[in-house]
Length: 157
Image 1 (cartoon, helix red, strand yellow):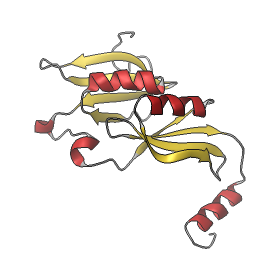
Image 2: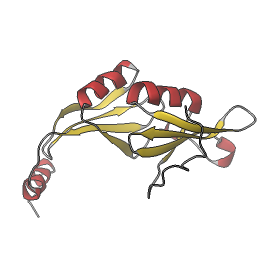
Image 3: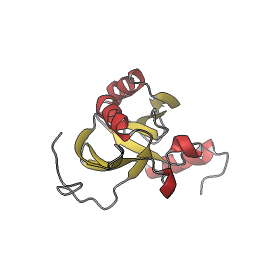
Image 4: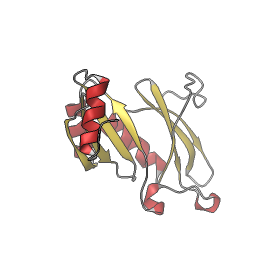
């Protein structure tokens, strides 16, 4: 781990912050299963972490422990998550297998999808959903719209 001031080396427009139970274990899991690089930590006196900075390729994601007294809760405490983070890679099948071997569970199986990606979704052991994807072919926008409309049972707009 290279110790830095959190997010000091790279400023992106949007940086996701995720709350997990046991941020130290989550950081280890994200490194092992999804290839993250830990860049820095901000501990608090009771052993929890206010922030752990992770890099996934060219993107920063911050994770933190739960702080229930402040209303900072993980998906495991609130009964799920409504969003997902996506990792694009040139080797999605390898990343998929590694994540499953590390304890991820399948939300949507990895498969070739109509918008031109090989795409699947997993839940990590901390309750967060991740989409893993690899672009495999270019699809014209009108074909994507038509396929989406057909999938949802409607007419193409």
